[in-house]
Length: 491
Image (cartoon, rainbow, N blue to C red; front, top):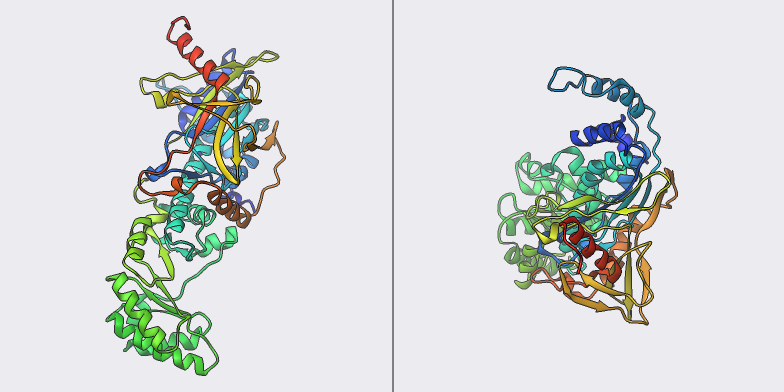
């Protein structure tokens, strides 16, 4: 299912920053109109002060690109825009050009669920420069948000040590699209199910949920509420026990659970949504076990995140399923991933690639030139380093990688290391060539990826810095271009 088409039912070509259109128009009028460009989409720092990021959003980006075209309504709207002289901003011929635009770019990307690191291209776009430019904003919008949420979900799942995580963030997520895509990304990041039924339908994610406090409050007693729910849904009974007195609520749930057993059904467990979750879960576990419910789960919610989960585990909490909502779906402690989309090479019709670089007073904002690929090396069943290399100039026989933030940090890759190139062909000159995995396969791939790295990168505090660097020839080219751009002779 093309979920963007299902959700919106119309063109999303105008989902862009205005300056993308003004640049496209200016390119169209300039001698650069027929040039090709190569752009790299990457980020500069891992989110949440963590040691890794989970790439996510590629399938949504594919859905967007497959339907990338300007509708008549889009063109009619653009025709109404005026310059500061009150005249039409865009010429009619340019609008006709947009109307007849046929996508012709080549796109390579890392698969969803890939563990990635700063400065690595998650997506590489090559092709007509106007088209490449028009894709910048929507690709960043899609990839930044979903990679952020998938990374948060992965951290939460690391904290639970394999115990199930349910995503409960719909009601506090950032709008309808923010909620559905957060559910999708969280599932790829490792959560087991969502409360978001629309996301369940769109993406095939398992859905979970029972009842809220309002159900309990609508009856004269907590016991009556549990009994009526059990009558209605005997195969979906996890009772919310903290509406009035939590421990008494657990005892009442047990009594209803025994009646369920007599009818051949099984009480699934209880949910705690407030109070001292460590203390209450320990007390609840004792009550459940003493009454013959050792398999009944204890679900906990209440503004959880990975740090709170670790703390609860340190306190001996007996929680077995974790419901995480607001702080997952909104990426509570970091609201955005700082992904960027930079021009790295330019080619005139029939000419050679000209490598481009952006300078800055901040070293981390100096862009990397070249047509990039990522080569990931593995030794003794563990990933050991990633090389960012140029597909035309790099020497990958005996690679040395250079830290882009510190050229004195260099690493020679083991001669016996096996490797894989991470960027895979997605579109070739406009034609879709990728066999996309299912969302469940992407989720499993993310799990396998995480397990292939040293535990140090998964630490929440002062994580290990995984070695990622520019292949030496690419680094030398970058240095040469920096000197040239600053008007200095390269020593």
